[in-house]
Amino acid sequence: MKTIIEPFKIKSVEPIRFTTKEERIKILEEAGYNPFMIRADDVLIDLLTDSGTSAMSSDQWAGIMKGDESYAGAKSFFRFESAVRNITGDKFIIPTHQGRAAEKIIFSVLGGQGKYFVSNTLFDTTRANIEFSGAEGVDLLVEVGKHPEQKAPFKGNIDIEALEAFIKKTGRENIPLVIITVTNNSGGGQPVSMQNIKEAKAVCSKYDIPMFLDACRFAENAYFIKQREKGYENKSILEICREMFSYADGSTMSAKKDALVNIGGWLSMNDENLALQCRNLLIVTEGFATYGGLAGRDLEAIAQGLEEVVDEHYLQYRIRSTAYLGEKLVSYGIPIIEPPGGHAIYLDAKRFLPDIPAHQYPGQAIVGELYIEGGIRACEIGSVMFGKVDKEGKFIPSMMELVRLAIPRRVYTQSHVDYVIEVIQEVYNKRSKIKGVEIVYEAPMLRHFTAKFKPLS
Ligand code: F0G
Image (cartoon, rainbow, N blue to C red; front, side, top):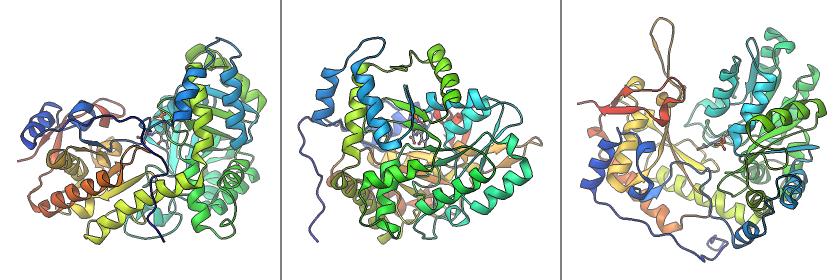
């Protein structure tokens, strides 16, 4: 087979500013060892997130010029609505400014004290919005998904037996919604199989509980289904996406991922009464029902992005370039979640730095080293993000200690990826000298964004 090439030419470029290692040591210190606090201009390769960092196509930029900025009933809204409906099949399509705005609305309507929202794995903002409403979030990931070193095709699946057991134990009246996150971001960007979505829906239907998709990376999930699940090899990506959504009663979406835009999202559903309540809240907090906190031009760019993201050449390049990074790291003995996920490679910090305990945040220590060594910005997904302290003051670590290298869509070329591999190798080679960190400041919620750290001596 020939080399899989980037299925695009580059029309406009953005220069990268180079820094020295000495400069980066100082910058990191000033940022409290938290890469979220570093200026983007001080970063060489930014793998902090794949969210809102996509390069838009010339057709999307053309859409930006065509945006209809009418307050109500803009032409751009109807193009957006029909593009979203083309994939989800849902009746009611509510634009929001990003994914968490959709979450805020749905959980304000359905949440509250005594309620439980069940998922394969909730993303951190999703969980935060659930908890903010007074409700609780419950993750029921399949066992294999909790073991970074174990390979399986669909490590993002929800545990169907555990789901049914939880419903029986908790009572269906206390579970307003089940949410399947595709792909499972916090669990390593791992896909969910069609079979699993179907079975989860069957359980939900049995107890009359609606099921939504957190659809951020739906196209990447569909590509994995095509590659790995029997019976889907000859289906088009669009057909697979439609089938995935056909089992769901609605979706929350951050268009900043698989709609290939820099801002936007939606909330979609089939229940008219629920849609009415959500729209009413939307008007209070986001904007009128036909723009939801976005400009008309953003709606155009999303509509165009949704056409481009289901292109198989794009997805082949996308998934292959992530796998390339993962496979190279594995070949050098560097521990990652295997097999590689869709949008990111996750270093397994527990095996990378086995001598650093969870309460000294091994993932955060690696993140700091990657920045100092090569100007690479990555994100800890471990006990900084999910660690908790119980009522007795005992530290409860995250299930996994990971460092996410998220790959922005259509932004970096293969030589950028090769550089990233070299830097990780250098950090790995000197791993015995790396020290843990302690937290010196933290916010009460979503602390990873603003926490300050100090390296342990
Ligand atoms: N759900 C999932 C699975 C996500 O990955 C994200 C965002 C959201 C919901 C919230 O969407 O950012 O538009 O409000 N994930 C980003 C990330 C931030 O870096 O993984 P948002």
